Image 1 (cartoon, rainbow, N blue to C red):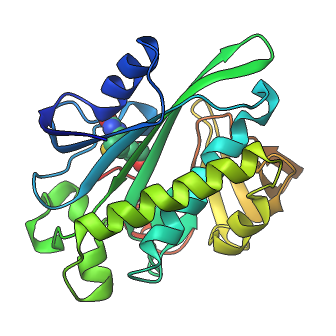
Image 2 (image 1 turned 90 degrees about the horizontal axis):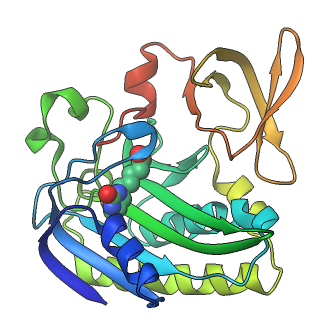
Length: 252
Ligand code: BTN
């Protein structure tokens, strides 16, 4: 493990490690000056409060199984958070609480080499002891932390240990051909919800009825059934009242 007081992005450092031949290293930072989330968003996290960690991983997997990495990581991060509070997954890989507020996110960046998955940078950000009243106004409405979800301060070292342990188990399991899909399905609150899926160039409305064999979200729309693959960059928002507030759709 590498621990940095300040770094640009732990994902970039993990990528550097993979390039120089290292693997299996967890890069932890107190403060990221260029932390990033999915869809080009910024990931904001004040020092000393949360977990921002990236793991440099060289899996024994086929490129066709790349979806399993993100799925296994989502399950592992969720399980680690569930040692503290009732945390669930919002498809594809947001960590949320019951009211839909987001407390963590996952950014997996993979490299493909022919039909093999060459490597993966697994980036995880979890809001741990960051009270909502201290969050910037623009994210506070849709965001929460384990502190607010559980009502108590959470040991970050213990949480990191639980997270890395769960990751180790989850990644070993997929390399041994054990699929994370069933557990993912159990933890995913999106299934059964009315959703708006932002596909970038268009928007899809419907009811999420399940997952396909590669963890794609199956949505029943007015025009029929569509499977939104996990490879696409999408956002899902339950259609209840103020959608943005309900989902934690913006990265904290
Ligand atoms: C998202 O929900 O948009 C994904 C957020 C991922 C944030 C983590 S924090 C550690 C790692 N380093 C980064 O720059 N991003 C990820």
